[in-house]
Length: 391
Image 1 (cartoon, rainbow, N blue to C red):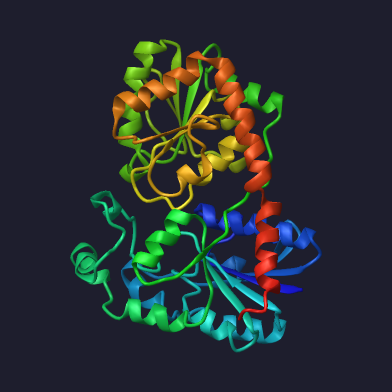
Image 2 (cartoon, helix red, strand yellow):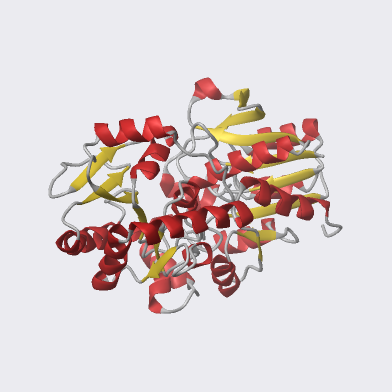
């Protein structure tokens, strides 16, 4: 089967989890004997054209514009659509599977794809089908978002015709959500979606790499709490982590908070690593005792949870978004409201103090990853949809 994957950003240029997930899917599908081609965008003129990433053929199309026009060019981006059309015509795919295309490849690419194959589907890795950015309105207790709320918040970036345009381009195109909670949010805003969970390759750092990381970041003798993400993005729960940690240190004096991906001045047991490559990040997971995922925004899935499970680590995760579908409360970690500082801190401290429980939860989490959240499992789920008689 010849499968074309559409994704705005793709490794090694990926800025978010969706690109890495599409990379994992591409490799898993290729391993299963399919011919896989990726069409992606790039902001580097030197990378335009046909290339290869880990054995996967990738065509990159140049697109770069100011974000203020995203509400318009996300519908039809004249920088990319002619090339997408030409490539699909030449490739003649059996399946076109779109992912995050809401910035550069644009929703029009889905409509174009329907001209060259009967099987087209789209996986939504966020809430951009009905939103323009970080979704925090769910904290009011409802997933429904009204146009006047978006108009007030996004002002000049708001396009009153965008919603209608998206519905038109995706007419009769199956939509896949990556969590049940995301599917509920999409349904509340006019989009029906089935669910296929994300999956990753369960790779880990070696003992030598982990030991080197521990020495480099002066973690010897420390009980490490790992938070992956920028402290400037408040919706990722950075404020909740920083509020929680002093309480943890009162209970566990040797605790250290490792903030991966952010530069800062290390102090009072808080250690900033700066940017980490995917390879080094795996060592950070391996060096940790517990991983926290405290997002108060609506993270539809939360790749950090899987990365922790791959490293055999327990997770204290948010009760919002898709995380509770990944982390089994009391079995592979804990699910908390990160705004409840005392509960959050107590759960983290419990796992730092009870190494046997933390180890047991980490092992159960790893087993759960292999059973439900591996790249191979994700690929098989999509293969069933590719082979379905439904359009």
